[in-house]
Length: 176
Image: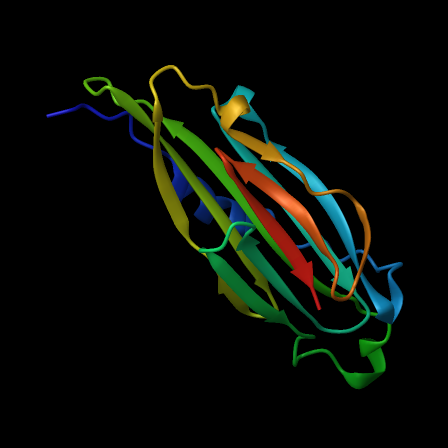
């Protein structure tokens, strides 16, 4: 039986979801776009890569993350919290987040290791997305397997951008 270095992915992801939170910064995007701000919460020097992509807009929006080659797809409607009064609604941005967590699991008695990752969309009381795993060659480096591609700025509705490369798959983020 192969001995596995226990992956901290599920615990770390849960901790980050509780502790990182979405920023409440007002958006400069206005109603026509969604502001994107990428923040590295933990890099590979800590043993895993954790990146938060904060989204903010004056109005609600839909975020979709999908494999550029087809397959995996998650989507969430990010809406203003029902607890915000109409008077405050114009001054309070609608915030959401795409959380990316990746960890390389070393299998001591195996001919391969395992890349575990999570791409999760949250905001407006909704959370979608879940973990995935894929075998990788022994001795692989996390920096070679996961690359954050998201860029800061304002995305027009209907626009897509590359979000993350995981091994040989590129995931796109679209806001509508």
